[in-house]
Amino acid sequence: MSDIVIPQRPVRTFLPENFTVGSWDSLKPYFDELLSRDLLSLTDLKTWLHHRSELESIISEDMGWRYIRMTCFTENKEYSEAYMDFVQNIQPHIAPVSDELNKKALASPYLKELEKVTGYDMMIRNLKKETEIFREANVPLYTEINTETQKYAQLSGAMTVEIEGKELTLQQAGVLLMSTDRAKREEVYKKITTRRLNDKEQLDQLFSKLIALRNQVAINADFKNFRDYMFKSYGRFDYTPKDCFDFHDAIQSEVVPILNDLAKERKAQLKVKDLRPWDKAVDAEGREALSAFDGGKDLTEKSIECFRRLDPFLGQCLSIMREMGHLDLESRIGKAPGGYNYPLAEIGVPFIFMNATSTLRDMTTIMHEGGHAVHNFLTKDLELNDFKSPPMEVAELASMSMELISMDHWDLFFPDPQQLRRAKREHLEDLIETLPWVATIDKFQHWLYENPTHTLEERKTNWIKTFDRFADTTTDWSGLEEGKNYLWQKQLHLYEVPFYYIEYGMAQLGAVAVWRNFKKDNRKGLEGYMNALKLGHTKTIPETYQAAGIKFDFSKAYIKELMDFVRGELAAI
Image: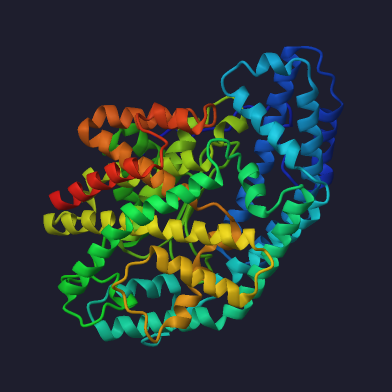
């Protein structure tokens, strides 16, 4: 497309234009220079921060590409080794020097002046937090954690099942759970469960090891437990564990009853004696699964057009990514599970990775990751790298709102009005199912790390207790107890990004509020959404939500108000 301008990375002012990250030895001189430089004025301090930001952007982008290649091709030894080389031989050197640099910045007499500037105040708050939690003894522990974490991706990436003579990834097999043939669904469900359970001991041991390592990190940093450490580490200045427990309670009282109603309705529509776990994804009226697109190319083109209809700038973002080869969307064997949008700090154009087959869920995944991507584009020209890394409660607001505000243009994927209604309904039901699952995973994590020496039996008991608290009471799990006991093992976040999950729930509620504004006034709603994203990490979470015209609030009353709106929208479909 001729009207697309491919972004160029900014001209470097500190490192040579042709510099690439090789080894720690190639990076060390730049860190040394920053450490030894005299900062004799406010201008010196600002220049120093800009130079540090440039260095960190280059390193972050290099790490990004190593991670992207490794996840796109998990069987490629060279990519795996390049990533591990970074984790084991570069990252451990960076952490202590970063701590020295933080201390140098915090010791500057000109910092007070800078703290009065929007954006810098957030960054300085973060620097203080980093120095408070940094411990030299945790550097090797983090190396070990990162090494262990990679095993989860390898174990999951290697999981396949054979169905009708074909080897399928679990994601590909999962699509068959939408089949209208109940016996086939049951067979597929049981094969997937059996395959997961084959590795249950390995996954349990891996998780126990990660819990022990993480707990040690927390103790080294003088925290009572890893949960408290992570709240500090994630910079959760705007809410506490108690707020999370209030969120769990509100979900239980305001969302689980809707979940129950939907399950009962589903059971009645399917006309089954017992609603089983393999009955959850099929269309309740016995229609074939919705197919939203045909292959990665079709998905890309329709997504670009969907974004363009909302706003030409949004379409432009995805077009640029396509032109630059920053999209890898289709599921294939040897590809890590899941989906992500990886920000590339120097060029500012992110990379979207996902495992698309053809489902509605895949289509909403690209809307979700596309929302993250738009966020990266809107913040790419902010002054410092730190300003571009918003807290996750804001990052996920960007993605989850996009899922909802894009619904007006889903006719691109579903030209048939009946299918379009179905797609919207399924998505809203999915939203209602997401909130209790988020509460389940979050509540479970609080318990895991509050009780780090728990036995495997206690872990299982607590999982079931937590799962049952937020699950519908209609689904019949008899004979499937073992699969239910280990359902948590499929949740990548528990292994790879501990405590990163409640944000989805908070942002989901925020997204409903953004959507409500958008329904009232498209232009104004979209403007509020984009204004909030442009702030990056230059404001607090409540201030950013306010910029979008919504509240950062988890009270039962507010959640009820939002759920009533969703119920209304469901009824209107």
